[in-house]
Image 1 (cartoon, rainbow, N blue to C red):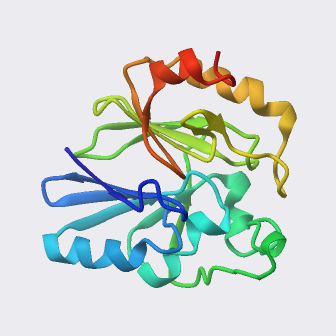
Image 2 (image 1 turned 90 degrees about the horizontal axis):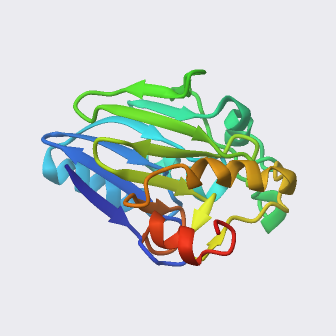
Length: 208
């Protein structure tokens, strides 16, 4: 399995491409990343099987517009409204209005049991971590020992909860789910560098 990170540590949001052979899945579609993702996928002759969104804020979904994928786009049922609502996706809070044109896109909800099987990547566990948005999720690939945390967990910090859909009362219960995961996990957040979950359990004040 190969992992290709787009914009790691940059000011914009991160996107991640997981590659197995000639097939790939994308985690989040940050504003600046699809202009790189599309050509990369084409240059490698990859088939994009699915896009997984960690939540519905504008800086994680804007890139879907230019990428115009033909594969399914998975999002929590609770954040599906963010795709077409500037208020819910947070763009209005930053002085502009973004609405994704969903016509022609295959939008799918994560399964209610929180598990997906996607050959050749194996099992994907969808961990609900609402507080940054109502439908925020973390995506755990057990076979690859990888965790994608969106804006739930960062190196040394967590996501904010003062935007539409945020709920500070759910921080503790959401993070408790991550504390139960193996410390050996490498996690990849929606912004900033990646880290080791075990180190965050020791040093991140929100996980201690």
